[in-house]
Image (cartoon, rainbow, N blue to C red):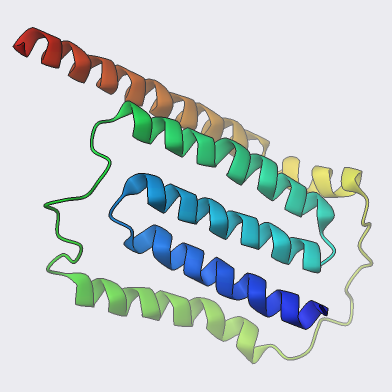
Length: 170
């Protein structure tokens, strides 16, 4: 199989996984579809010869975030979205705003046809990549880690409170 065929297969899997994750009423199935999307994205990174980013994608998103989501779902009671409307009253405005933002984000890259002449050669080492990713964003990543930890603690506290209320009601 050549790279173009692998690209199209992984792209279709990624888009389908993302669509199923968004449209699925069962949260567990939605998380598994999201993990499928992340796996396809890691495969696309491998096609781009970005092995380090593909490995980070698998470890961080599939390994950590996916498992965190599954634990959060298991600690809460509501797994299915029965009785909830999928579309809100303002869905048309939200869709128009989304397409406007998408157009605003895609317009500059589509207009730029020439790469800058003064582009510096890139050091492909993992050390250089780590320094470029971590130096400016260390505080942001640590705050995100604290936020995820607080969310997990909140889910545990909510699940324990719900279990205590059910035990008292019996």
